[in-house]
Length: 399
Ligand SMILES: Cc1ncc(COP(=O)(O)O)c(C=O)c1O
Image (tube, rainbow, N blue to C red; front, top):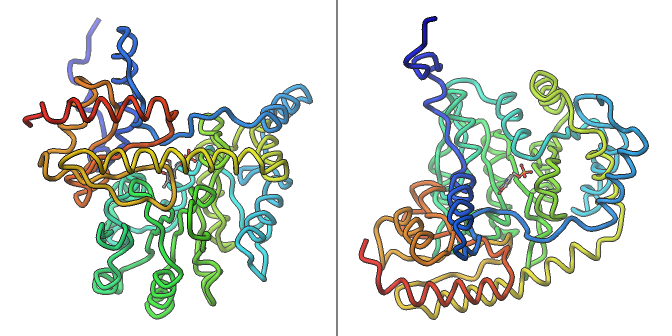
């Protein structure tokens, strides 16, 4: 029998252009440390620590009992697509509502991002995105041989885009600009003024806006504003959204995009070629999430807000650490550049030496260098313990 020594030689060249979400690797490492009996506070992964609300779970269980266990159309079941179109339009106060034809459902927002960019980007096209950023956009663009063009988010603007840099980076090859507000990893929220400038640029230079609004229900001060509310933008915009963050449904895998019809149909073609369709009973549970009691979402948000206040004030009390107040999502993104030039090393050291799992800011792009990301999806007790550990451990860190 012959054996193959170097299986990696068989891999295609394109895989070298893939990025990855480091949160999953750190989660695995943190779990391994925890399995040895040591306490670890998990602030590495971006998922609510709450259980999925009961009425959503019940709808999923009922759907299994009622035999919603067969294939569905690749864009999703019409009832869910209609519910999403109506809910998304009224949540954003749009005078011209979306219809089912605009909605494509996927196994989480992430595969929809992949399928959307596969539908839009030719080699050489430019995709502008904010740096630091959720890594899925630049990873897909790279794989597709498009050029991912970073524009800085500025700590001095509470992690809002540098609009002058954005204007300067637009070229005839700019196909789309990705915005994400509230933002992962910084918690920054774009203002209506910011969105108006982006909208003017989009209309003048004829590019699309991809607006990742998955944290639109996780917002603590300002009212949520969507770029689709701005005159002329509804038909130039693709919304990415999902159930993971608002409804604590990360493991159910349910997300969607809302796009002009021709784009939605092509995303559907990619769904058809990849996962075929989302689990049918999960889609039924999604209808219950959007049409059922909104109380649990509001309750989770009130708790997130309390935790945010606790972690931000605790971090700011630690010498060498400074943290802006995130207005949305559930991440704190403190500046630790006085302590280290290697944020990923510091994050790993904190896990190994203090039992605090977080991520280095540079996992989210070059502009994240010198920062850490803490997901405050942890109890106040855990946050308090983690802050005490940080206060105790950081003076012992010597890079
Ligand atoms: C900005 C952003 N978009 C999309 C997603 C994907 O969420 P999911 O695939 O769970 O729907 C995430 C998850 O962390 C995110 O932070």
